[in-house]
Length: 436
Image 1 (cartoon, rainbow, N blue to C red):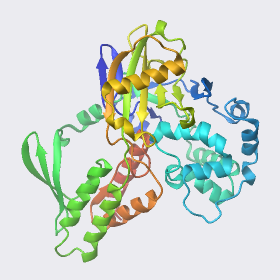
Image 2 (image 1 turned 120 degrees about the horizontal axis):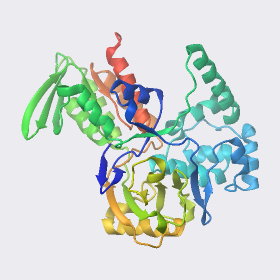
Image 3 (image 1 turned 180 degrees about the vertical axis):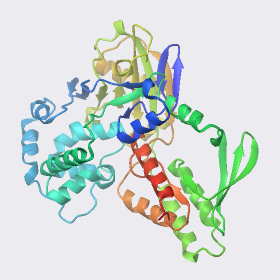
Image 4 (image 1 turned 90 degrees about the horizontal axis):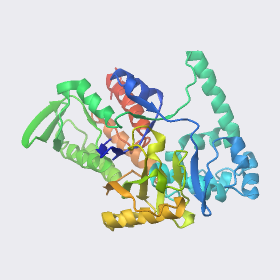
């Protein structure tokens, strides 16, 4: 989470928002940030650019039937979903395979694929349905269809909430008054001297008697730390290197001879996870120069439209205090798994590509103010086919090293809420009497 303020424009260098899940709100409350929380209007429309114009994305069953995004044939395919064929041999399907089989290719291309691009910047022909949307696969397996399964799932969730005395809370998009970096800064202050910043872990080793030794370059000096437990919450490519270090330290007794090779293979599997490049380009115009009233969250674009831009967030419409009075701030994303060539573009070329697409979609002809351009050589981990096998192998290997844990956005969800939920679960494992 990296927030920048440039001449009154507030931009994000990582995630742009998060959903108000239980674990997220609990953390916010624990560190005393309730008063800083911003919530976007839950009714704010989202748009999809299709066939030369922006269409409101349907937000419910009725809107789905009424939408002009889908043909009558596609809507009939939706109605027939309960009778769609099941996965014939139970093989792992890509998102495109699963959605096309149950809901039709048109719905996939026009609505689902842009949504997935907005979350993963990924390619639905490669992304694993089982890893990205495991609940939908489970509903089909358990109930035979998505509509029937979803209704039963929602009923079970409602009954569970009522039994636990928890009110239903609609999830909304959230941020903080001074941007998302408010959260890590507050957590750091809350933990005080227990947090060490500006550090580079040069090596992580397991000790024969248990525990770990870390070699850390801290503020220009090499230091050594010892710990009983080690949680690797680094990006997946760094985690893979740390696991190789741990594996190399397991050559002596009492470690099983096979564990070293198993950890090394697990590290190789993690290192193979694709992280395609992505760029975030924040541009601003005077509101008088923008033909559209920007009355919503922003828009996504199907890959079939011939537009390079993946999507655009209308930042100054979503949250307050994101732009000076009279200005509109737009956060744009380009690149991802379907356009990795953006890594070779200069900053000027990125701006020109985004500006040209925005001219086509929103009609701005005036030159924008370039606020920030963020380039990510390794952006969002892709849960491609085979992902669960790789993650399960790493998890199995790690559980054989007492006190070693993995955490990160490559395991069970890439969102802020997913990572915080996973952190809660990791802490429960560490505090459990049955800890591995």
